[in-house]
Image 1 (spheres, helix red, strand yellow):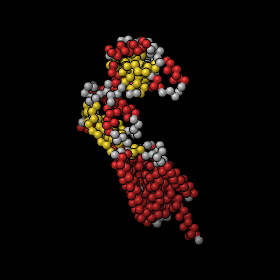
Image 2 (spheres, helix red, strand yellow):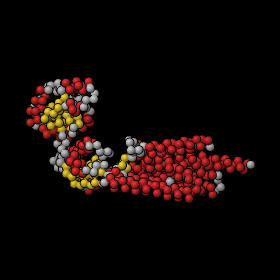
Image 3 (cartoon, one colour):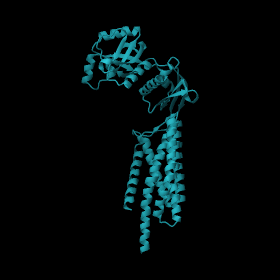
Image 4 (cartoon, helix red, strand yellow):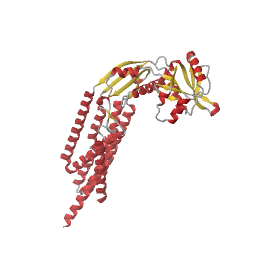
Length: 436
């Protein structure tokens, strides 16, 4: 009895602590607020179509990944919170590699024209110089803005014909990056390397420094190499950025949708009301039908709710209307285990067993059904998440999966511990009364 009471108090205390964390972390200045998707926070949904017909079929995948990364860098430049950028393949069942679309969701951004302008600009590849004098300044003052210390050379990605991965046989076949410029770029590159030997030549993609090699000597012929401690995968990434970042495929905007902040706020309020009403109705059913055991189940349901909300903040999960629907659905499913246990317990009570023994046997008999039903739900959620083609469906599957896992804890651990603690006390009390 003492053991069950101890753990029941611990579980309730932890639940109260977690509930306080959920409440306190929702303050405006908190970094742990719920992450809301586009449909709840308002924002812009853009769909682009990529022109891949000038790219070899085998390179389309790499080109789209590079384009996605370039767009993500551009979005980060204007501070969008939790943006979503994904590639979608067209055709029947997504089988046409030539029909590539880029889906961009920008929560909180309602200026569509500005968003389209910033995203649609051609990515810029630039070569900038960092003189030895500026290198010394940077080494002395850590607060110096590195980007400001570089100066333009006029050499850009417009003059780069191609980047490629090579392997230096003199140094254990380490990967290096080869550059080939066009005629204009070759002349300018030779001039830059001749006049700035010993300086650093920074390579910037969309304003972000991706490499900074030293200029060792004048380089003629329009070809150069970037040496460094690259892994093959890192070298491949840089080459892809240089090739497709400098000369991206054309993209055209085919669809725009703006969701206002007011509409998003109404969706949030409606979702909160739905969740509140669902909890109240389920709690009322449990208490009316199962009396005291139903009250304990409601306590377990409250523990289930605060644990879910805390996980949404800690993972974090970006909540959409579909995700909240999955959470509300899981509230109803969370009591399934309790109902199975209570019904089995009723059957044992009818056989004349004590409350404690009936409850113990009820848990034992219900476990196989609880295990199998939750396992099937987990498999369904994992498959749905893995094969989902949109973030909305993935969000629903993720929230549903978390709900199923937490419901097993709340029913099997929280509810079981509290019920055993209270039932054992009742049994001992009744035995004492009989002795008197």
